[in-house]
Length: 337
Image (tube, helix red, strand yellow):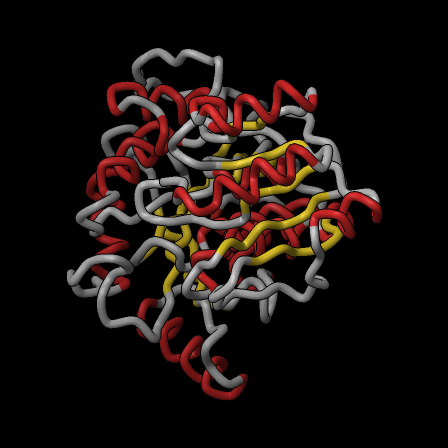
């Protein structure tokens, strides 16, 4: 995938920071690609970038406006269309990870054609996938799983892949969502794949490799989430992980967008092993990634220590405190170095 840079990040009028996680993710992991942000009245999310008008952004050299927002169902609100059309008229390409193709909206298609601009639909691909087979394949795989959606599975996977690479362990980050695809410039949006082919798509993005190579696969949804469990299960079976890391946000009592309670970490470990054994009998949990963004440093450190001791697993906040405890455990478990 080749998207012209730098980016202007569109945050729309989202109601909290989590709803702008695509914008935050791209900025956090590819800051050199990001030029500024643009918001609509009432927006409750903000990045560290300067607010820019479309005119200011194009004069500063922006090439693509990235829709940096996510919402349930991946819909495009009608009142965003005017800004997208205006961006195309200013000479910007558009990149979006919505569940609707930008070109299916007449006003956007017409503006793109008139201005000879590109529309990048991150959730749509020309690839076709077979059904998953579950056959054992060479190489090693690590999957991040969660107690909920939007708890840090992508950030943890990116940080863990970097931690492996820093130790000269051959590894790749495998993107399975719109933000990960923007960061990696490759991958498959698993939640847009027809359900029969989810596991096959997961096999496609983490194919057979050398025995000492690790694919670190970005998790999606949560096995206990009433909305997204189907996607998570297909990804688990197709990823065929040798190892998984449980990602957890400790301040929530219910899952995002629903009234279902957050499952315990142990429940997630047990269910992941039970279901994951279908395609990898040797699946095991190798650590806990605790998202402590909402906690003070002392509280975060104490909680991480408590959870690690309770589950007899290495625990850390991969972004705040690094991945060394989990990487150390992986190296010991799999005799890497």
